[in-house]
Structure formats: C-alpha cells, structure tokens
Length: 390
Image 1 (cartoon, one colour):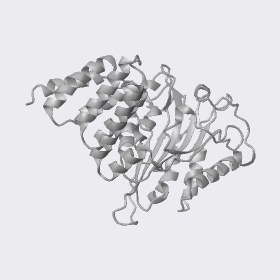
Image 2 (image 1 turned 60 degrees about the vertical axis):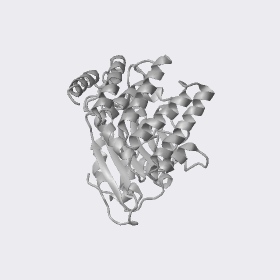
Image 3 (image 1 turned 180 degrees about the vertical axis):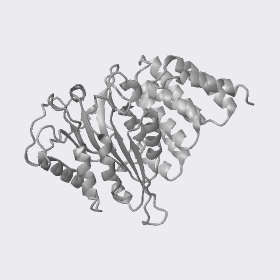
C-alpha cells in the first residue's frame, strides 16, 4: 500500500506503519488474515500512525520469513514513531517449541523453515527509542500453542464488554517483544472441534473500522473500543493483551544510547555500550548474558553507523561465545547471531576484510546452518568470488 501523507512540522520524522497479515493456505488455516487489509487500507496513513505524516508498508500473505524480516528491519530503523499491525496465526516449531507467525506456505511440520519466529520482533525492535513503538495484534492459536504460551484457561463465553476470561496482565513470555514496546490486542482461543469455518480477524477489523472515522484515539482507548465492538458482534476476544510501552527512563543507559544514535553521535553511543559491556564482563564474566547483551547492542550500533565489518565481527564473536558456553547450535540466540553476522558480511565493501570475516563465518555456518537452506553454500560461493578480487 502506498503511503505518505503531507503536513506536520517541516523536518519532522514521519511515522512508519507496517501492516502484516499472514496465514497458511492449507487445511490448517484458522483465520483469513488478509481479509482485514482492505479495511486498514481505507484508513489514512497518518491516522494509522497517529502522526502528522506517515509511511505505510503492507505485507499480505508473505511467502518467505526473510522477506518479512527485511521489511521489519527497515521499519525498525526508521527515526519516527513505529506502529505494527499484525494479524495472523501462531504455531510452534517442533524442535524448540517457540511461537512463530505462520506464513502462506507454513505447515505444522515446516514451521521452523517457513514461518516467522516471533522472537525476531524482539531482536529487531530492541534499539527502538523508549515509547516510540506500538504493536497492535490480532492473533489466533491452536490448542497446542495456546497451552504452550501459558494461556491454559478454558475459553468461556464473554461477559459484559467481552472482557471475561484471560484478561490484561503480563504478556505471555513467548510473545513479549521487549519492555519498551506497547502491545494491544488479543490472542483468539483455539476453535471448537465443531467449527469448520475459517475465522475472521474480528478485533483488527474493529480497529480499522474505528480508525476510518479519521480520528486516532489514544492506544488504550482504541483498544477498549475495539474489544467492545468485537464482543458486540458475538466474538469472544480470548486472551486480551494490553501493556503500555515505557517512556525514557532517566539514567537508563539504553535511553542515553538511543538519544546519541538519534542525534548522529554514533561513536558516543558505541563507547557507552562498550563501557557497560566491560563492566558486565568484570562483574559477571565475559561470556555472561549481561556482557553478551551489551556486545549485541554494540553490533546493532555498528550496523546503524554503517560499519558492516565491525557489526559482522561482533556478531561472530557473540555466536562463538554462546557456543563455548554450551548453547546448542540451533538455539535462537545462536542462530540470530550467526544470521546477523551473515547479513552484515554481505554488506562489507572491502574485499580483504570480507575474505577475513568470511572464513570465520564459513566455519561457524558449518556448525550453525540456521533456517535458510543453502546458507553455508552461499558463504562458500561468495568467498570463492572474493578470492579473485584485489
């Protein structure tokens, strides 16, 4: 969907909106996710974003998780407020039991390779400025996923306003996109055994209908009105998700780092993260989660500063450290580190540096093949081509 509006203060960063609607095409389909897009498409971009100007990206029934990741990564690095509207179906991968957003080609046996891992939202959004990101969700889950997320209550009939049953509270851990992210929406309960029809994304359609009035109310108000409308139409909302995003916290180093990046002081941001990494290493050990967290922050900061070689190097170091501590090669934190190193490696301009880091990446890829078929072969082919360059 196109999407730039005009108006607002000159030079103000526009808002960014990502509309993602995804569901399988086979018999396991629980929700017709893409049916909500015409409703949202009728809403002016600025209203979707809650800003004076906005850019909107629409993903309708995407086929590949990497395509979703690319769009999410671009949206996450946008300077203004970010709003993500996500509609779809959750499934668990059979190996790690982690929730994934099912895509068009996803089946229960191929979740790991064809669906979008939910923790990728957290990975990509962690450097967003506090208070600058909102997720509005209409998700559907089968019985296995519902129980794995800790939503074990039996779905019951809605009471007044449809708010009975699992209500607002801590987000299911597997769906938490990070402490600074505001989250509103619901996870629809598993369908009854007698239901044969594909469900509609009733909550998100209610959100879209409310926004078509041309007014964007505060998130909590919009959320409550959508729940009331959903219940009035006879749909039980299921597990209600409602959490405000945290604003800037005085003294929080993440806030200071974010402000430095936004003002273009990349070296200052990197130096601050490096000091905290050193402190964490002294206090907890160089391979502790505390130290590795700050190393990952430095890798992201290098990416934002355009230093692909440094970012790749740090991600390779993080991956190797995690493997040394005994983490499995298919652990999400290990795969994420190697995948990000691979992504940054492909952006290195210096052939000599690319050859050097490519050798280390190939060694890691032989141990951590990741989710993309042929990733190791890709590194080897690129390395072969680099050998012919000066």
